[in-house]
Length: 420
Image (tube, rainbow, N blue to C red):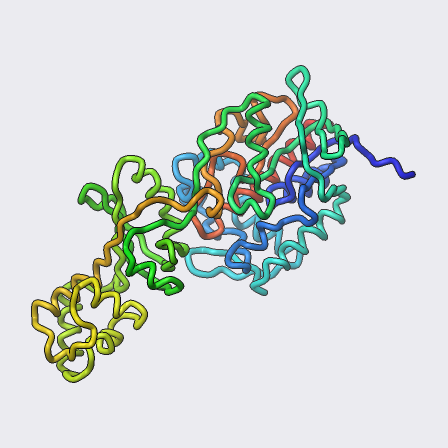
């Protein structure tokens, strides 16, 4: 009978992006490394990113501008990014044979458009680096003694011992991929403060029926304005997607964190503008010209010369004007009302979708308990953190995977160094 090895220099818990990167760099740095994964495969959540195309980084190389994309906790990432920033991440994947392309807003994708190409390259690198991987291994306990972790207990009673440990178990979003939130419990039990978990990059629930009836319809570049107490709080723009519960799409996911904070203070409304480059006078003039040219066309059909057909009927309904009316029968006041409605499609936000529906989890291990130069815990001597479990997350567009690669690498190198 072959004896299973159970003593290592570095043990990484979690086989997502941060965990894989941590294990690769720990091993490359000379540490005998094990990667413990509860699933039968690694990187399940990675395959979902970028709609399956894997938007694995953002090309913003100005670090000061880059960290702004992570909100108030962004400065924590300065050192990690100075060691392994956007260009270094792209170079790393290029060296693994992944050709890349940069699309709008600096989003970096594999040229093939295939997330599984990125995962395959990481799996190959793990093997080449000599990392031992334990699949289907659920961690049931992390034990400490004298301020250090002394053993990891797996289901079935197996015990793994290591000199240093890295927790990279991700958040609570998409639990079917293995992100169950257990890492937060271990960190808490080991003495770390956990900032309140909340959904981040998550769809919004809205009240109005007309929007739900447009489920599946998208607007590629809509203007978005967010209001509270009748005052505009902020504005943004980008792609939105109507859904049976309300609103989704990259732009909505990107503002959901700020909307969630506003909802804690009171009611929030969103104004959508499918023609953000237009203004009221210009649009009214354009409608007048279209109506004059085709006086016998039905209103809904004529509006499709100006706005997407999918929302023309909704605009008529909101403005309370018969969509089957011929445009010759539309009054000047009604024409102006149509213009106002098109540029200001109002929706009442009733809440965020639950944390499991989000792309990432907000909150996590408090930054005050982690050394940003090494990702080492300030509470447990031989523990490091990487990725989403840390209380820092970014906007859409490759920011969150970039954080995983960077903090995971730093944790792996740091854990290996302190073994020696």
